[in-house]
Image 1 (spheres, rainbow over the protein chains, first blue to last red):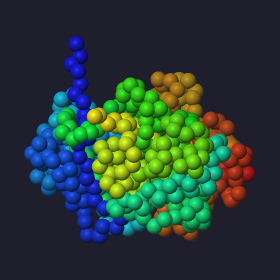
Image 2: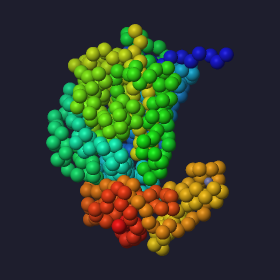
Image 3: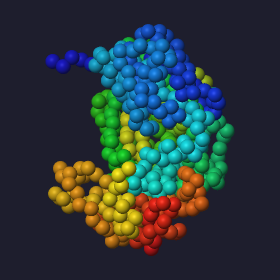
Length: 384
Length: 117
Ligand SMILES: [Zn+2]
């Protein structure tokens, strides 16, 4: 008989403020978030037997996880870092769950963070990120990450009828959520007209279609037991990796998001109809639209119509990224991609404070890395 | 640094692409294994440079100083008639679905492609 796997719960979260945090290094930010997550979990550092951390573009180190452990005085039985671009946070949570499920670890600390905004020149950040393009075929053209997404956007909009005004709705929605989060990078309200009139970056994407570059860190603790009521378990997880580079995308309507989501739902024994909260990666407005639509939470070209109906608002049927997403809460690399899951956990656990929405039971979390290259889906469920 | 046959080809104003020896499948980018069969040996062939625009953007904010002088510039993904997809520059005004042909220009020390109708 195959022994039954342990359940895996999220038992604590912590974050720094996002934005310009002058004077803090990547490790210091990670330590702040990790300390808050342990405090939130009422857990002694000695109880942590697994540590997963992301990468930091401002601190490229061969062994970031153990470097962090030394500075944070942890001596885990299992540690390494994970690199999967924007999907790193999702991949770490999935792995933390596997480590707990198998019995390898009892308490896994998952942490990411960096001083991506203040720790380097803006050009340097943009050039580092552009290297996700192919070194021979793409990067030499003077392409940037916004340009890769803009090219994909042009095709997707051509095929679905999605418009720039539609994309603007998503940017406005994320800002309207970030306004209520004290730690968000961008909290000034914006209008659809302001998004449409913002500075061109790579058509059809304008400045307000793009997430900011932020400093900040996030951490979560995944454990075999939860003493909190209600408990929040990771019920299912799935990945898909169908290409690395934009040029190699075989099917604009099958980028991997649907495959990853399908695997997560199958494992959880749940259906998309069971979901009452969405936590979806939003590096650009087009990223969010494509992911919502490929995972089936809106018809093709129909994500903005659901925004206009209020479905994705905090008081709607399917609240989406109530922290403000990458587009407004901010993007500090790995930590930015962890923010969606952190907020989903807080909403399910009833710990979202002034942002707390009506009771939610089941969240769908999705992250992508690269140019919609790597996909990780997670399903979180409240147990009480 | 070893130079890829593709980059080498550009210097000769040739648009080179990989073709699987075993099944003939044309590859996008450079592969070590065929995307269609179990083959792992490839011929490099020379494309006629004609294709159809799959995607287009106009980059207003160049990622580096060396491209700032060119901005705004159009980047496209083109489906070449031989069956591979390629990113390149394009003359202003091209749209998805347009028929284009590859042209070349020198930028710094590199030869790059600029598609035109
Ligand atoms: Zn083949």
